[in-house]
Image (cartoon, rainbow, N blue to C red; front, side, top):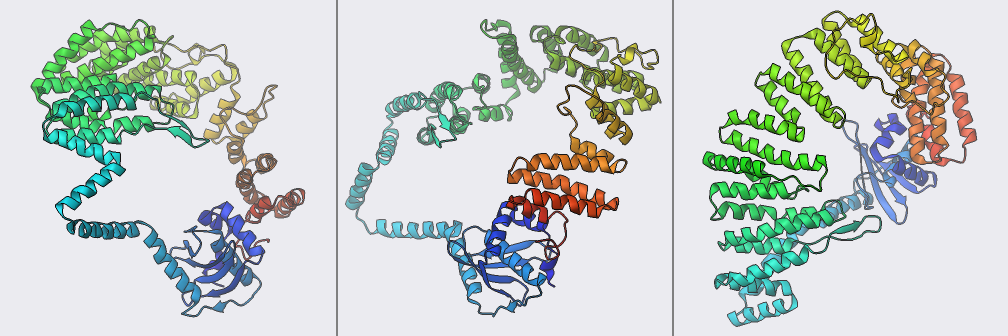
Amino acid sequence: MSRFSDLTWDDLNEWAGSKIVSRGRTYQQRGCVSELAQTEAGALVAWVDGSDRYATRVDMQDDGALDSSCTCPYEPSCKHGVAVLLEYLERVKNDRRVSRAAGDDERLQLLENAGEDWADKTGENEMALSHHAGKEIDFFLKGKTREQLVELIRELAWQFPVIAQDLSDRQQIISGNTETLVKRLRVEIRDISSEPGWRNYWQGEGYTPDYSGIRKKLKVLLQAGHADEVLNLGRELVATGIRQVGESDDEGETAGEVAGCMPVIVEALERSSLDSASKLNWALDAVLEDEFEVCESFGEYLHGRHPVSAWRTLADRLLARLTEHQDDEGAGDFSRNYARDRLSDWAIYALEQAGREDEIIPLCEAEARRTNSYLRLVERLVAAGRFQDAERWITEGLQASRERWPGIAAALRHELLEIRVLEKNWPAVAAIQSEEFVRRPSRESFTECKKAAGRIKAWPQVRKCLLFYLEKGELPSQQTSWPLPETSMDAPETEPKDQFPMVDRLIDIAILEKKPVQVLHWYDWPSKNRLGWRGVDDDEIAEAVQTHAPDRAVAIWQKKAERLIAQVKPSAYQQAAKYLRKAAPVMARQKKKKQWDDYLRGLRETHARKRRLMEILDGLDGEPIVKSRR
């Protein structure tokens, strides 16, 4: 017996994947493995016949990880390696001798050469080829006269228009005639941005605009010292590029092409003749115009180091823009608020960088009612320790947002909770957490209630009221035994869609509290419309009751497995095996191994023609392959 002898089917699946293991098993069963031998170090080597004849080696590292090499192109683990390993285990199982491989075994030499060839076909070969080609090109060019070089360049320019265009551009820059180049670049930008990108991934078709030529020409122009010209082109590139991305139908390829040009424009902005404040304003205009993360390079520029005086000027400009800002009449409330909030967010950032923090909260107050940006204001007030002002704005914000903007209302309630925590007002904390549980019953919110109510030793009564709510629908705060104070704002109400008892949530909590009797009680609750629990998977229920009611747990897992097997898909068989593996040890603890074996035998007889399922069932017991059923 060798180190391979303890391998299980799970080990093989983890190493090579179930599909490759299945193919390798077929190869072994067909007798494709020949001349199996074992090296002095314990590795396996053999020939495997497939579409060709392959030399294959399988070894095990010191940490137990399997390793293989093969003259086929499918490394690191392939069906040939699996077949060799299974052939070896078959021989061990049947006490058949495995010969010793000679030190000069042909297959080992083939594998060594194949490894070298593989390396040559990858990066090492490319580097060697590039170096060799470079040396040959140098030698070739040094042997040419000036006239011959000129003739060669003309010939290449004739064959490759991109070279001709590049040479023309360089000549215009050298001669100081950049106007023609700038005009042509502007035309190219308009041309390339005129057609939206698109991609049909199913058919492998599509069009992605190639901005590499424009990017290269912008760099050439910038390196020649024409930053202002590049920046002017950049303004048009930002506008047309963003429009093109908005019209495109792909997964970001067009956006990536446009965004690839932006670092050049940022560098041009830094080198331009604009003053510092105007540079910030230019970058900010690009960011505010961008809806598709094309101009992230400008955002990074704005978060860099800039003179305080420039931030002061920019802050004043942004405050003036907010005063003059006209809402887009055609946009919805969300779009209008979003656009204005972006502008005011940058005004706040500029005020921070300018050292004018005292103007920030008044600005937030002015904007809160206009755009429902109550959360931003409340966060600032809480950070400043102005809790009473924060509560006043929370109250107003909840009244303004709870109907139309429930997400804002939820965030404001969380801020109120944070204030009560900072105040160490634990009864109020527990009351707020309980109201959140009523809004969204879950294990997480139940646990938070337990933590909060536990601080004031009120958890037993709070728990009782919360569970009564889930069963009967009576709000905790309306129950006579409710021990917590009112929060006095935005109290939850039962919704018409709510159905009681909330069986799925009651099961959830019973699982959390490790109460299997309650889990089964609610799991068996009669329901005319039961199509499965929305938030609790049957597998989790079986896990929760396996000790208390092992037969029920096994029955649940069997049912899930049988439904998956009925799908007649290898991937579903793998899922089914997961549940059968859970059931097996439960049956063993009940001393019902024979009954379990009979069940598996019945599955085999019923589904005997499903080869992949039979293979998966073979590995269910986790026993070494040499001991398992074949």
